[in-house]
Image 1: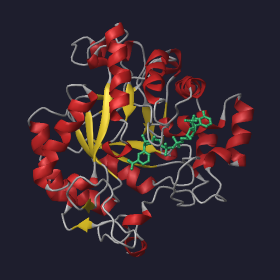
Image 2: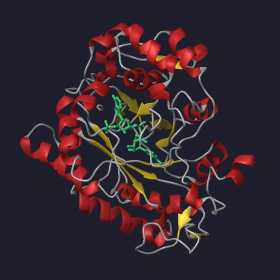
Image 3: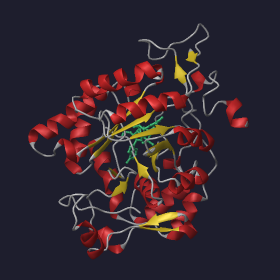
Image 4: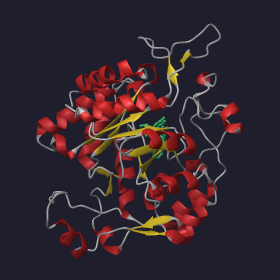
Length: 364
Ligand SMILES: NC(=O)c1ccc[n+]([C@@H]2O[C@H](COP(=O)([O-])OP(=O)(O)OC[C@H]3O[C@@H](n4cnc5c(N)ncnc54)[C@H](OP(=O)(O)O)[C@@H]3O)[C@@H](O)[C@H]2O)c1
């Protein structure tokens, strides 16, 4: 069950259950439309964060700021303006090579007294060159040191495939394929559990795992899998995977919720959900923007969502997605746009048997 927690109330407070039910802010899951619907009172909590419960009792703000593919030099200010409008969740990764800037933005807001470290939920991801169990803890310590954030709130395994160990972020052969190593992601997971047990990270999870691969991690896990981050938008709804996670108490985060319109991976003539006529028409009818429709769509499915922007106006616009509702009919219409169309593929490492979306593995 997801709950809205007023910021002044500690999650461990004994008055919490009373307060929560008294202000009627619980969110309920409607099995028939497979979506979460916010109650009337939740709407009156406009412009403050709504949280999902992680299996270890911690809370993740449902809306976060994505940071991939940001122009160098823009992120510190973007993170600061996001915090100013109310974001408390920032999604980053070693792979993006911008965690220093993100850390700077967060630390600047802490120094101003706008937020404390505990108010912020910082997600980062273990890169594929650090999958060897001996490399996992040093990789985590590197990120903590470079961000200056003392700990990571949620640490995800970015992809299941491992790349050659070493300093090269994308080790390639002479054909341009990535050098992959034969390290099973369940071994990497076990090393991540040790890092969790040491208290360097407050929750651990995975990214880009299909259902059966996630089950393999579940089979060996001693620490609960807190989160699965995957590509989700109306062209890729992954209903079965989302339902599976819910049944196992794993929260889900949607990446590329707008369809990653400026992704370097994208075919230039391929249309993305933010330009879809149904989405545009729905936005017009509701007096909202297409981005807000797409972000709200995920939240109402009970899915966390991390739209990326470095533009202050769009950052604020996206945060407004907390403030309206889609009807059951609109949710169904958006779900019906599914085409199982994936935009983020990492085709350069299709040669790895552990690439989840390689043509070979997609055939199985
Ligand atoms: N786990 C993984 O493997 C993985 C993979 C991909 C992404 N991610 C995470 O998910 C985040 C989001 O995904 P994404 O970056 O691929 O794509 P996205 O959030 O779907 O789209 C981002 C693009 O949309 C533009 N945009 C943002 N808000 C807008 C608005 N209100 N109106 C119009 N355009 C808007 C942004 O441009 P401006 O910046 O100019 O506003 C940016 O070019 C990433 O940044 C990253 O944190 C994770």
